[in-house]
Each structure stands twice: as structure tokens, then as C-alpha cells.
Length: 373
Image 1: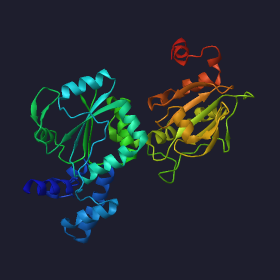
Image 2 (image 1 turned 90 degrees about the vertical axis):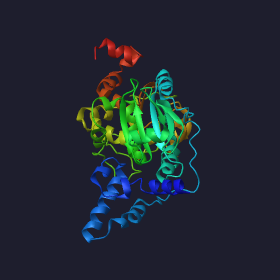
Image 3 (image 1 turned 90 degrees about the horizontal axis):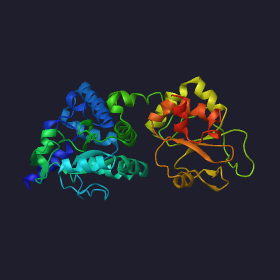
Image 4 (image 1 turned 60 degrees about the vertical axis):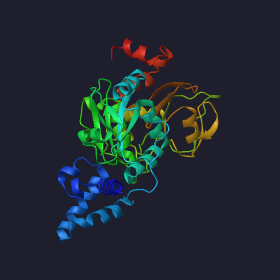
């Protein structure tokens, strides 16, 4: 009974520091961004009004639009999580052999924000597909007594491991790269926008060049009014989207932007790469359209098939946004760019497409090497 009460107390104060104080600057710096911001704003407001700190929790629950009280139903891990044998050396070696990075998830069975991570973030198909493609996740129960072997070969209980790693505020995720080095640590719940960015930050090795804070800031120049809106460009053609060029060839190549709302990588593409006037000019010389990867917008594909944006994206095997697909005058796919890293190479890609170099060299990489880029 005492242990269960202690669990409930710790989960309820996953938003705060030891003892449940939510206003500590040190605590705010390590929490998920939305949670931390809400707490920081409300702590300042209550302090200004002379309200007691003990009243912050209820306000936080209201502001976040969620009940942060421990759940009655214990959490079930997704079936694609790794079986928790808890030998991280073996888990890491298996992940690296599969071309992935290792993530250690620290959570609690009844933690409200652990449930939210599973229900909301890992309830989004694109997040699940991207995570499974790039990471192996091993779960650790911060109250567990099972033995863990860490990456250095040390053996300790799950609970002691969580305490040592200072991941007792849940959910926490620690990302390890192929060398076993820590690439990123998330403490607290991160909403889908920031969570997608975190996955991309590690998978595309941005952690080797910049901080996660700086990487997130690269999406600040977004050109949308609401979270579900897509970034617009003057060179995007308006619907209806009849892209058919199977019978009568087009005069120029086609660029199709598959995007979605609330997408950090999409914001980086539009707020940085596509700010270049030369890139805008080159896309303007192509037939360029933008599709919401989850929408039921009618589309006639370059091969003349009637479908929707959602179904076409599925048939193309797309799950990451933004994805840029280029088609030739006859509707054959030339090239696709589906990585944040690839956006920095857009100038080369557009030179390849605009100059119709694919007619002489259908392999972009060979063409690129021949040009010594």
C-alpha cells in the first residue's frame, strides 16, 4: 500500500521536482517544452498573485487539457517495443546490426504522461513507422527490481538504474548512437511536433552538429496560422490535381510535395531552404503541387490513376513528411528526397531535374559524383 501511494505521488509530480515543487527553474529546464512552459507561466502568475505553490498542480492539469492523475489501468507497451531482457549491451549491438539507434524508455505503468506518449505520439502512424525504421526501444520500469546490464557492463536494478540516470520524471527517453554515446535525452512529455523533431534530430545525426534547442529553433520561421495548416508557396499549383501525363507527355517535370500539419521538418524546409529566391525560381519552372499526406483530396496520379492524396502516399510507401517526389514528362518517378539532410542538397537536385540530366544519366548519385559535388 505504501509503495503504491508513493508511486501515485511520484507520477502526479512528474511535472515537478523532488517533493513536488513545480516552480524550480532547474526542473523547468529538463521537462517537455509544452509542460515546462505551462508550469513556468502559471508559477509566475500564481507567485504574482501571492497564491500558494501547492495550487499549481490543478492549474497545470487544466491548462494542459489533461488529467495528470495516475491512471487506474496499467500501461501496456506497444507490441513493437523490444522485449525487456534488460541487457543493454546486447540490445545496442542488435540495434546497430539492424542499422538503428537504441532508445531506452523510462516509464511507469500508471503515469498519465506515459499513457499520453503511447496513446498520442505512438498513436500516430507516421511517428510509429519512423520510429520503427530508425530505432529499437527498450522499456525500463523506474520502480522495477529486475536486473539491468548497462552499456558499460554494470549490473543494477531498474530502479537504481533510473535513479542513477536521473530519469525518475516520466516519461524519459535516452537515445544512444551506434558508438553507444548519448545523442539526446528527453525528460517529460513532448507533443508530436517536438517529438517528431527529436526523432529526426537523432536519426539524421544533427546531434553531432548542433543542440536540440537550436535544431528546434530552425522551425520557428514557419508560415502557418494553425497547427494543421500547411506552409504555402507561390509556385504551388491550385487544385484540382490532375497530374496525368501517361497519355500526353507534359512540357516539364513534376515536383510533388507530400506534407502534413504540425511538422517541424516541413517548417525547416519552407522557413529555410525554400527561402532562397533561386530555389523558388527553379520550382516555379516545374509543375509543383503540395499534398497533405493524410487528406482525402482527389488526385489523378502521373500514371493516370484516380485516387486520393492519402491512398497515393500509402501506395508510394511514404510515411515521412516532407517527402519530395520528382516525375519526368511521362510520369515516371525520377527521384525522391525524404530526409531533412537532403534539403541542403536541393540546389543540386533541382539542377539535375531542371536541366533534364536524368535523360542522359538516370542515376542521380552517379550524376552527382560525375559533377564532383
